[in-house]
Length: 163
Image 1 (cartoon, rainbow, N blue to C red):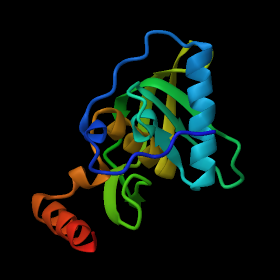
Image 2 (image 1 turned 135 degrees about the vertical axis):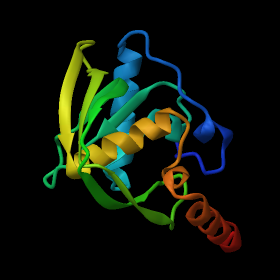
Image 3 (image 1 turned 60 degrees about the horizontal axis):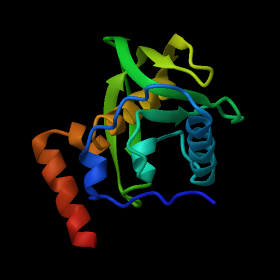
Image 4 (image 1 turned 90 degrees about the vertical axis):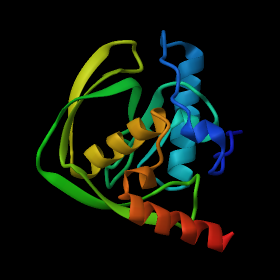
């Protein structure tokens, strides 16, 4: 059984997640649950706060054949490219809505993996977008928070009108 995706505007989605202090069997079980949820959507990534777990955990898989999941604890951007990549971003926390965002096309990320080892890895294009999107969730941000003020207000007006 997997946890449900919490609906926006749940306050947890606007709250920064707590750092992970150690990788345990419970941590690995949460990651496994997150992978199952991400695959069922299907999606390119999921952050723990999206399912109500307030820990800095995320999973990402942008491979076309799937099965290339990267599990990240405490991910942090350490380098970003000037070149950008545009993608229509969405979230299962707010189904039926999306917005095109430009983000750095290449990022270097430091994170703790499933073995408890600190890693540094470079992600590009869609992988980079998904990792940045998940880090935003861990910092209490939704993708539409990155829109200009005017575009964000229009976006949220459309959301309110649909409800």
